[in-house]
Length: 208
View (tube, rainbow, N blue to C red):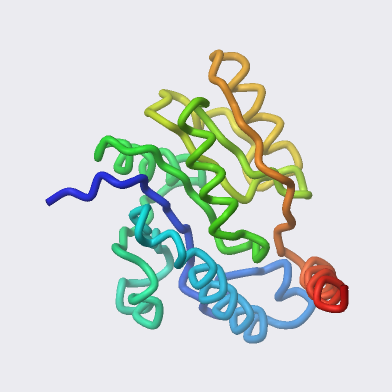
């Protein structure tokens, strides 16, 4: 039986040294960067567990076979391999599959450790009366993207992995007349400075 619950897609890579978090690795080395990224995968997936009764949680993997992700198998309902191509193409194909099940689709990555089940719930709620939703990141990108239905061309003509990514996408939505909801701004972790800033915010929160 097909699972027609809303689709939550978590994009993640095989945490192999030299293949992930290269900007972080430039400071702390590829082995340590991969070790941290492995920890972040588990942290993000754990934070999404409260949603498991209401959404279909899918791991979208790249950089290895499904057995390379075995340690997280209990934290998702299903695994799918990312398609080839740039990020836009991979998102487009993943959303086509999700919408093919007749469900709204939300995608997140594993770079934002401030992602929470509540934020994702807000995203799906927003899709009840908006065609698209974004979770803006502090660097000009976004930590979450979702659509209520198929939107042809939604992922084209975007400058990916840049300070222009969200602005380009919002401009495309305006061009097509797609209604948009925005979640609160959160922080991605790409560099050593990002990681240290995240730890400082966590420490401040605990002290407060």
